[in-house]
Length: 262
Image (cartoon, rainbow, N blue to C red; front, side, top):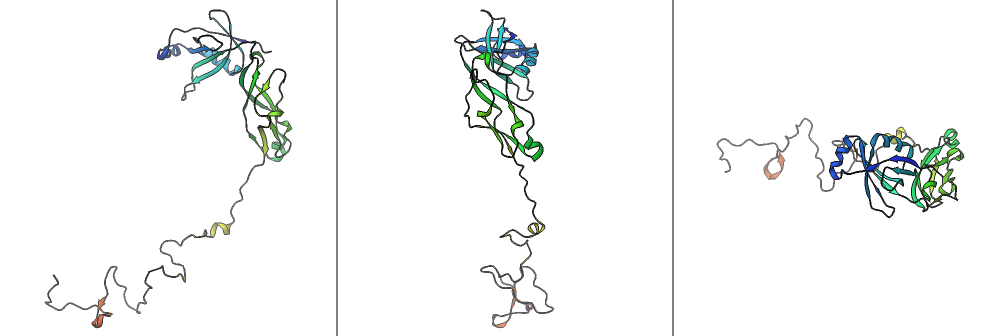
């Protein structure tokens, strides 16, 4: 049975957006709720709470002092932080009964080294970082250890059913066959050979301006016409001159004084 950690709080009178004034004074606003009682706004020293929270986590049983009616057993339900700075903004405490079981998410703590990683070059695939448990508040562990030294070969794995807990005090609610961690091989992609790099992909077209030798003209396109030796190619867009009979020939000069077509 874990001993409850004492935390000094006091009733909070500053509410709403005015709580920023408390944070500037080094106070952390919070609320105590649940336990068949009304919610109670509270405040506590922010620096002292943050140092303790690093040791406690969310599963350590607390005893809140400084409130009317004596000490209040509670668990930390949630801590809100600034998304940019990470500074604590608010804490929620959930009242609990020492005679009633409750539910909590307990983090997994991985210990020792896997021989499959050390000697076979495997890597660990972590499928879960916490499990859900049911227990009396005073019996909830801070964490559950997972011994990796049993992962000897590739594909060795640890499942929820393999976790070591005192079953008389703690009931793990996850599926027993759910994977926790597994030793898997490292996948190395083969590098392409020079021939594979040089060969064009199937269906790849030739570069612009290049024509494959012996390639057939595109559908509907006119075949290229031979050019007489020494002849200069026509300027782009120029029309061929027409001789008698309508056949292409050498360009003719316009007769002097001939009227222009208007």
